[in-house]
Length: 431
Image 1 (tube, rainbow, N blue to C red):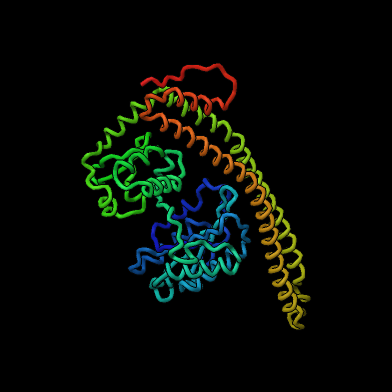
Image 2: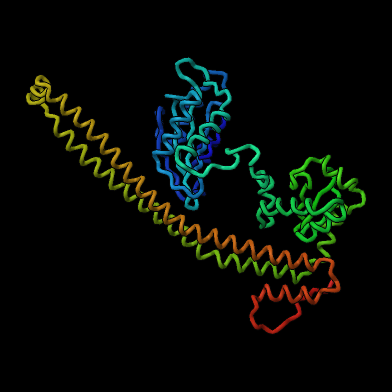
């Protein structure tokens, strides 16, 4: 599983983030070494202890993300957390473990207090990223999970990996950022100068422009701006060496205006209609997932209540074995009281392990059910991205092709109406 850790402060913000209801399920699995029985209180304790030192980043936060298609048991998460704790020098430090479930996937967050309360100094985490990467690779191998290319060989790392900023920018246009990067790379490989690159980009929905500070950029019909060097994965000097000076290109504002002239109101309406259709298709599946998540919460609460009642009954049985008065004194003198206490401890531990096994089993079954429902949503998302990309391609095909307007009109008509025998109408492509 992928391990991402960092030193940090802001315990109250972290506690609020970990308890956000944006997840389908949030479970505080463990609070060890704290007096408080809630996350905010625990992190307040860690902060209070840290005030006796000069340490500002008094917490170490670690996220454990298993492979997407693997069902990982709770015990595996805990074993990974224990091993990470050992390698980071955090053994015995107060810690909190929180499980999150979202869209049928389960991951964990572990937060330790870095302050050694006896020595009153922070635990040092030298080279912690290297240690976590090494442990992550070991976990993949030990559990026989498919090893990511980045762990096999640095040279095999996926060139289409994208940053968070690139992902968010691509999300705003409802397009897969990996496809955008691939489109830029393919256009670059197919061209040898600015003119041929612009032609290749035009086929993919972009046009070259001159940026204010970044030299060569590309603009799509949404008006989004893409730094050419970043999205092709090249260095700025490599781009300049092939394309020369961007002075002959239009400014970004001019490129946007060109797109706005081409995109007639009817084409925008078609895009909006498709988005509404996609939303209608998704609505029942999303409602099903929300309903399923609510059912799972109720089932877990019911199990928790049932286990609590059973624990109380079994505790009373164990307590009744310990006699009071003269009989209790005799049991103490004869050694029977010690035997009873030891037996009670063993039975209590076994009961605790039984309850955890029941809970883990229920979670595993629920994850399978939720993953099945989520797979339908993911499949529909994939289909919708394909539909959306095709419509964009049709619009781009129209861009600048005055003489082939009728052909493009037929393509858009066929796409929107899905080859149904509707009466042809003018969809208003006049410029």
